[in-house]
Length: 112
Image 1: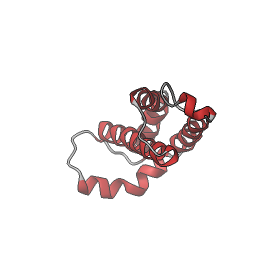
Image 2: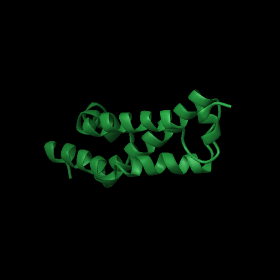
Image 3: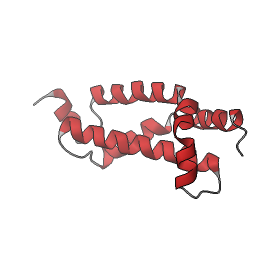
């Protein structure tokens, strides 16, 4: 049994967790640019009343879906409930950076 297989039932494999951390570091630094590239499309496609709440939720949701799919691709199965919780918690630890990135975009573009 490989080391990561021992951890599958209780937590994320270390190599996968490191990937999440690295990806989240890169992503949070580039949030204003990421939103800038997609904002007009999002504004036209979705009817939302609060840009800040919508964008924060969209980013968190996209991260969660992306990492669930990456886990499935890498390990050939969906993460269990504990692993889903660990993915969520790893993303949630970046909450302040995500919120700051969204706020920076909205302020730079004078969007309320």
